[in-house]
Image (cartoon, rainbow, N blue to C red; front, side, top):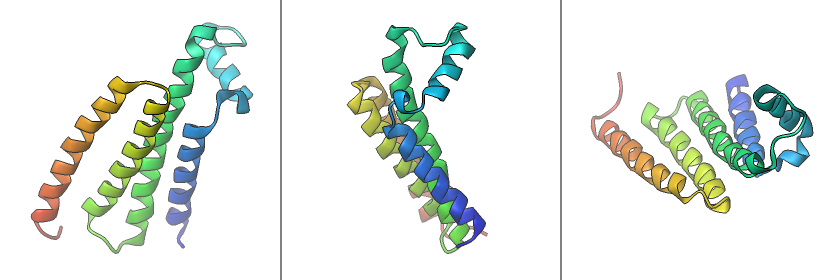
Length: 131
């Protein structure tokens, strides 16, 4: 595997870990965010659930980019295949984390975004090979 493959794998792994890890397992990160936004060592209690959900959404985005890089590094597919891999990876992780945290409006937004994204990719796939 090439270095870009490994970077993609690392990003997918980081994204999944970020989506699944409670902030209590990364206390240094939670403290740094609390200091940056609230000027204190701990986040306000009412913000913690949002922060945990946000990790899921960010994890989905990071993993989606990693999946895209992983497929691009293989150089065996059309670009729309790599974009599709990233889109599906993002959707599954972000939507699962959103459902887990009860952020149903975000799940609905993700469904709309997935529909728009897959429509664009289907158009690209029908347009033929890229030059």
